[in-house]
Length: 343
Ligand code: NCD
Ligand code: ZN
Image 1 (tube, rainbow, N blue to C red):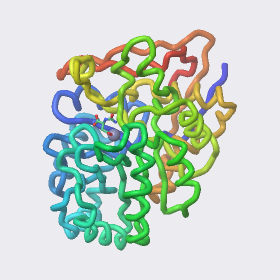
Image 2 (cartoon, rainbow, N blue to C red):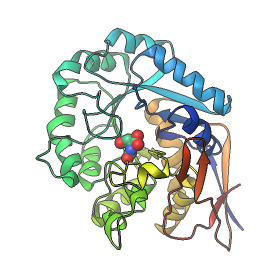
Image 3 (cartoon, helix red, strand yellow):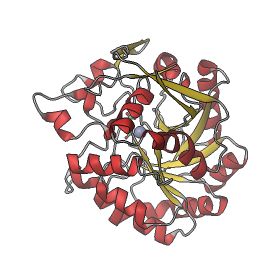
Image 4 (tube, rainbow, N blue to C red):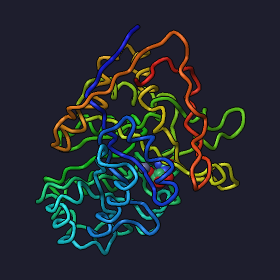
């Protein structure tokens, strides 16, 4: 029997939601992960230090203290730089999230005019607070499959040039353009990669009938891009680390004429990753990707606790849905059998 023991992994991009959904799905992450960067796109969004503190308390009330939520603020054009710096100094927040207005689920309060957040970004650069970007432009003229690459040129690179010292994480990258941009830059730039973008390309969403549970944002691109992501994740380059972007929506909101974006991967992420890294001949790189590179970027210690995976001869089964008080949530189906089980 083959086993693999890692320092306990962290999830550097996670949606835990609130209320009955939070209660229903938090254990799916807390069972395997020590810490997670918690996305602030609630309705209404988490915009102040006080709101982040209250949200953290609601999460801890569900997970207990064995799991550490690392909180983020949702950047708006009205964000007060002093509040951001004070919340960081007080240990309430770890980072700030930039959503271009309208880019994704619950992003209506995001940024339209990037000049209006310059003061906040400068204060963050000074205080060493990372900016996490949802890297897609929202210009209706730009094709949805090109929105990440255009964001790099039009928004991200200018922000980084005008705000020296700002540490940035490109969240959930989906293109070879994003991989190449990270590789071309100094190590104040990192990137998270999701589990599902290592598994699916756009055919999975569209061939043989539309598959709403594979629809997420940024939308999966063509196969060459998936291969570039896989190469980056398994390369050992410390600037790439795991952020699952596990994003639960109840099935009725996904299986709809206007279905929500988001793949829910918390339950089987570590099994899928072990399988994917092994198939790429890079099982030895999983530890860096899921347990070491993220803490290094965030200047946090690697977890002392461990997680052990065991490979069996017969496939491991996971529930196809998690029942929550907010409705059933479908667990991401990688489309191939999983042999690695978390002990
Ligand atoms: C996320 C969500 O549902 O909140 N959806 C998604 O497809 N990833 C938002 C996001 O991270 O873009
Ligand atoms: Zn997300």
